Image (cartoon, rainbow, N blue to C red):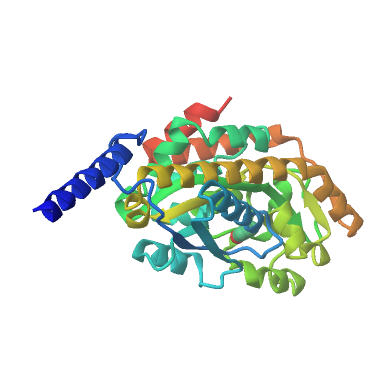
Length: 338
Ligand code: BEZ
């Protein structure tokens, strides 16, 4: 009998400990194991080389996760398209074999057209302004469009803004585009902008761009300064017009079941870690603008600016066409256009 009483007392004590742990959770609705020792070995994939800002931001995200979870969250990073194209990576993320991805907004706009909003030309004065837009209602609504696709959109990572690079002909005004064949990321809003300027566009994959411009298959490209340096395009183009006409975000996505299956406290760690890494990417990158321009000048390129008001009629064309396509794009334009 004494044995039975002892067992019942132990059971009651154990139940009280479990109940008090559950009650101490801030969220109230969290699973009881929120403060458990659950460990994670995440995988994150992206397409850029280790020298590019998106990889550095992925490393920062991994460090933040490690610190904020006291080592419970570890992450392996697969850069340089090691796991395939962006289409492959997104499939792997929605299937759950990869947890996280930093995927270009250009590719994501083929999965959810609202992401095209980020290519509204001249929507932001600079990267700092674009970074502030990450927290806007409309930016979050666009991330929310991924919910139906087995993914959660977490945040945006800016690797600078887009510039115009040309091999032999200096582009000083929109009319200079006439007859030029430019590589533009295969994303309709980006390509439409160039077509409206009079250029013809080739949607070559990034690994083919260097040799295409070297051999004269294309006359130049739309690019960001970071990738111009990391991919050594300065070896094959002479002119760089720093137009900063569009921002260039990667979208941080995570498998929905992985994310929603975690205790709320762990989801919070992920949200805070990703936000810190996204802030680091945009602000570090904003601070590198002058350094990157100087690097390209030192490599022999002519780097210059073009008066942005020359592009006003093309901005209007874009707004009219894309605003009609999607209410979230219209809301984005209404929110950020001066
Ligand atoms: C591009 O397609 O232009 C690109 C992709 C990733 C990083 C930089 C540029």
